[in-house]
Length: 329
Length: 250
Ligand SMILES: Cc1cc2nc3c(=O)[nH]c(=O)nc-3n(C[C@H](O)[C@H](O)[C@H](O)COP(=O)(O)OP(=O)(O)OC[C@H]3O[C@@H](n4cnc5c(N)ncnc54)[C@H](O)[C@@H]3O)c2cc1C
Image (tube, rainbow over all chains, first blue to last red; front, side):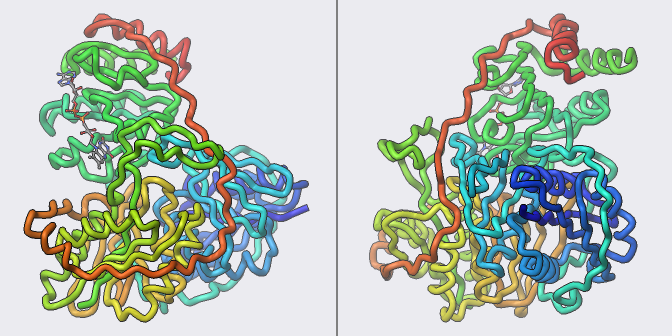
């Protein structure tokens, strides 16, 4: 019976969705390797301990809490030292991180400290005999690798949405621990966090994404895309590289090979041709809708539902219809 | 300033891949290769930094087979000064094994800044730069989309989910580059001629042992061909009906 570790991403005193999912992924591995415990590490500014119960609700048996004023912002060096020390001390079979910007920054540092193998960006996890096997999209998603680790601890990072957080209440013991390295001593410091789209859902966490392409013709026409996103209530706005290159939207909105990789429940592609570099970022969406005036556009080859026609006519009509459908519920 | 850039030879992605006979690799028949996109932006970052702080030197390092000389030459033709090939028969799927070899090469180089791409688009590990930083005990800033380096210090922007982190760090440091930092320059004819005379050393890579094995590679399931619901705004009610009753996303 093996215990499993989960690193919980938090920001501004709040656990991120990715953090809950990391605990759920650890729970899944623990259950499949004989029902060991899940030990979560939650770090942040004083007050973060109040979030520990949320982790117990999704399957954490023990929550190790690190509170330090210097952890109000992400501090890679201190967090990596603390995570590595905890993993070493815990003798875990596996350690789960989130495949977010921070998780991708943190997990390789911890792997190198522990000289432990790291299987990155898992879209699925399975225990097969004495190996932990993760599915990992490679070659811009055109190939799926099955990566196996037999050594302990096996480090893995899990893509947002790959293992949804499941209610799985545990008694959840809380233990306060000290950081293994003082955040004040770190060489790299986050001096500011500029929150974009304040109050809006992040692309990685959104159930619905409405993305716009060059078919929108001008930056001000993104209003149509935003209104459609608003009508769903739980949608984020994305864009193609053609659009971010033009400066119509920030680069952080870009979806694709060199932008964000997303897998929402619903992806609505508005005036997007469907270049393979764009598809690399969204082809794993569950349902894809395309609106494009060119019926030969490659986006229609991956779309579940398509409407051929002018976005300026169709999008406002769709926005109204979605609003009406939501109101009828 | 002494600057290093680590680059990787990767297949050009605009093809349909096939799985190799061993079932755990990509069939290389007919593939074309180039420098990994993110690494090209890393080379550009190095060249720009060098131009600002001239005189200096930009060294390009690649771990790979002999064939990777072609990608090193491309970076030299863009303006890098010298190249190093760390020769391996085959690239391990494990980022740490690669990181150890690169760290061994970089350790005594006296570099002020070491650039990497934020990820390679073939293995998609997003790990090598941070691992090398950890092995060398250097500050690391990953996924940088804006960068200023002056007076022995750096300021960088990194996109995180829902925001931008502004980071400060001292040199020497490792920076991994995201798209948006710059656009890479094209090699000029003069650059291509000059690159032929630039030094390109080659030595065996001191690869670490791999703890991650690629057990299998598969092509993802094809998306079933969708359907055109209709044309123009008239098709909207039917689309909404399908999203509600069939896809159940509304
Ligand atoms: C190395 C590299 C990396 C890249 N990475 C990315 C990436 O990460 N993400 C990305 O998106 N791209 C990426 N690209 C760019 C990609 O190749 C395409 O150029 C880009 O995706 C095209 O964007 P688009 O669909 O908005 O524009 P276009 O290809 O110009 O398509 C616009 C579409 O809008 C339609 N349209 C026009 N007017 C209307 C109208 N009134 N009503 C309805 N439809 C209309 C047209 O029929 C067309 O299909 C990359 C390219 C390279 C070389």
